[in-house]
Length: 92
Length: 263
Image (cartoon, rainbow over all chains, first blue to last red; front, side, top):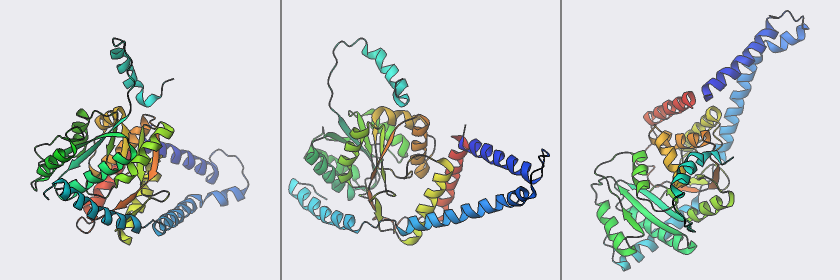
């Protein structure tokens, strides 16, 4: 199953469950509280996911390591390499 | 039940091995594939670093330079390096023109005598000092491929501004949500593969650019290949010249959605 199909399947399941509860399609005689909670769920879940995404990406950008040492080490090694290669006869 | 990732390959190999009575104990050899285009300045430096770190670690290796007809004389520099380090260590497999990364890998693998292949960029953004860590990680877990990650552990980048970091992390987040690939850095191209695994994956991949590297990981997952990760530092010296523009972002998203819908 492709990822797209997995998503379609998952969303359909949730959608059917939501529809069943909100519109009382199976005539389950659920207490009205269930309907009140279920009805705004899709919007609520989207908002929660949106906030989670922003928080996660924000955190990851903030903690993205800056490799200062690696850059300096590389500069030093480049000088070393150029000197050594010149000695070995490389014409750059 | 044999490990599924290499099952087809082992099946094919068994048939040819039945005729061979002697079983040779082969030690591991690492073939480094370096596709180059206009890397006259960087090629000697990356080769020097590779020789240094492979020499210090004692692993057996070869460096295969695949130059796509660079007009700046990269091939001539490569020939000089071959004289300095030996034609058993530096192997030249040039091509007439710029033909793309996937075909460069295929071309390089054909001439690789190692049982492991390391792919990396030749512009010094990937540092050979991580290669012994890749090798040790692979031995530790018997992984089919080991991927360098900028996003975990003490991995990171140098030379990226906020905008670039934001785009990178944002794109990676979308990719993780949509594809759930089981690897933290999908667009990275600093990896160690078992040679047969790389061969199998490259022939199944159809995308280009960033998305090609992503597709390799996704296809590896499909084939139940095991993936190890090593944090790496990515030192971007060319960022100033190659801005991540709207076009690149659009083609990345197109490629991502294609993978989403087809894998």
